[in-house]
Amino acid sequence: GEKVGPLLIDLINTSIDGSLEPGAVIWEPPLTVVMVDVKLRDPRRVVVAEIERVRAEVDVTALLDGAVVLPSVELTRPRLMLEEEADGLNVARAVRPPPGAAAEEEGGGLTVRVDDVDVQDGSVTFVRAQDLRVTARGIDLHATVTVDPAAGRTEVVVARTRASEGLLWRPDLEVPFA
Picture 1 (spheres, one colour):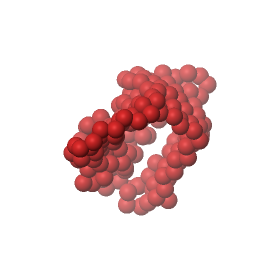
Picture 2: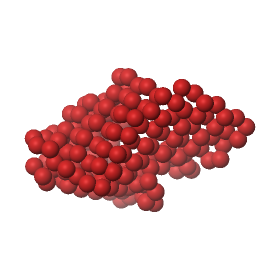
Picture 3: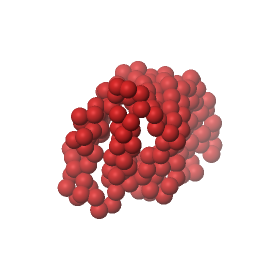
Picture 4: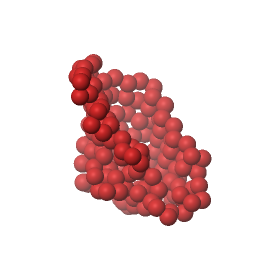
């Protein structure tokens, strides 16, 4: 049981160009992994997401087959820093297959399915060059997520969402919203 967390992290890190770095990984029998102080870094080692706590129920059978199936995931205080650059979003660079990986060339890759995602008190900042910054805080949402590189498909279905505050900024405009 205690080896499931490290196996999950290794599987993810060998399948992405960035890195997932938990401060600690705790096994909660029978099928739950808890990670605290988690960082997702892009290939340049820049942090693109920080999550205070991740609690994930793991389908161990799928994990042994090389897929990540998580019947439920709870994210506590995730902070996502999205930055649009010439080669796309930084978070997309972080989770794409590594250069030269068989997954990239053959249409394979790590399939991830999360049946039930709950986000509590999250925040997102989106930056585009020097002309736009949008920040939302106090985000709570419930969703399902499927990432299937072989099919070239990523699907996020949001069932409910709420943000307590936000700010749209441009050089000539600043608009708070709630």
